[in-house]
Each structure stands twice: as C-alpha cells, then as structure tokens.
Length: 183
Image 1 (cartoon, rainbow, N blue to C red):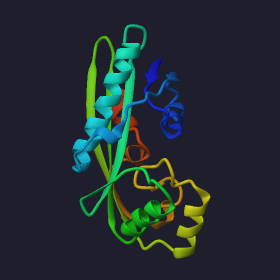
Image 2: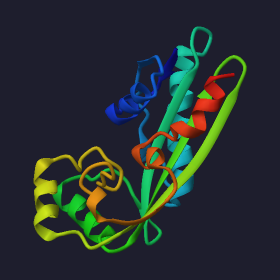
Image 3: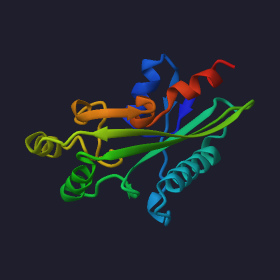
C-alpha cells in the first residue's frame, strides 16, 4: 500500500493498471509561486513542493508516499495547464507538426528508501487536423493536462515518433518505480 499524493485520475489509473494498492490524497501546493521558466527545474520544484506539503501532513510512518508532477515543453517553452480555451489552442497549435517533450518528476519515500526521478518522453507529432483539434478543445478534455495534450487520447493518431515511456507522458513513470516497490 502506498499513498498517492496527487489528485490526478490518470496517475490513479496507472497504479490500478499495475495492481498497486494505494490511497489517494492530493494537496494544495500553489505552483504559481514558482518563478522559473526552465521546464525541468519547474517540474522538480513543483513535485518537491507537493511532496514537502504532504510529507508534513501524512509522513511515511504508516505507508510510503509517492508524489509526481508533469510539465510539457515545446521549442523550449514551459507549457503548464491551459488557463482557458485560447491558451489551450495556442499550446496545441505550437505542438502541431513539432517535437514536444513531457517531463515527469516523481518522489517516492518509504522508511527504507527515497527515490527521486526526472524522466522525459519526447514526441514528434504530425500536423493536427483542424476539425479534430476544435472537437478536442470543445470536449474540455484538454483542461487539467500539462500542455493541454493527451497522448493516450487526442494526440495518439498524430504521433510520428516517440522516445521514452508513455507512462512518463501520462504523469507517472511506473516502469521506473516498480522495481523499488518490490524491495
């Protein structure tokens, strides 16, 4: 049993898919206080901030704590969660027919182990179809997702090339965590 320190339904889905018992308790860390525009640094600072908040609240005495966060970067720009329809549209148009990287940081701590991992999965996308893009934006599925992308959904048919793990792009590098859960 672990504590998933995240409100993400996608991260919960990943843990369920790998039959990992967990309870889910997200926090209230305010990412808006992070000033860096460096995507990798931002991702680490957001994850560490969330981890520190939840570690203070729950500790690890009873069960280990797992916290993760993801950001998207394209052309060196930090792409966080879209603020509105137009922000999401601009992010997706930037990523269309372009290379996009998803950076995921996770921190796992038990009584015996502390693991900090930063992983990157890079996608090269074909040009997004305008009608598909409009439908995706109208569906609202793009909101609450870093960079407004959904590699397991809308973006999947447009993937030309991928380097890295799909789980990293979905927000939790599960393949890297599993060996440590077995120990």
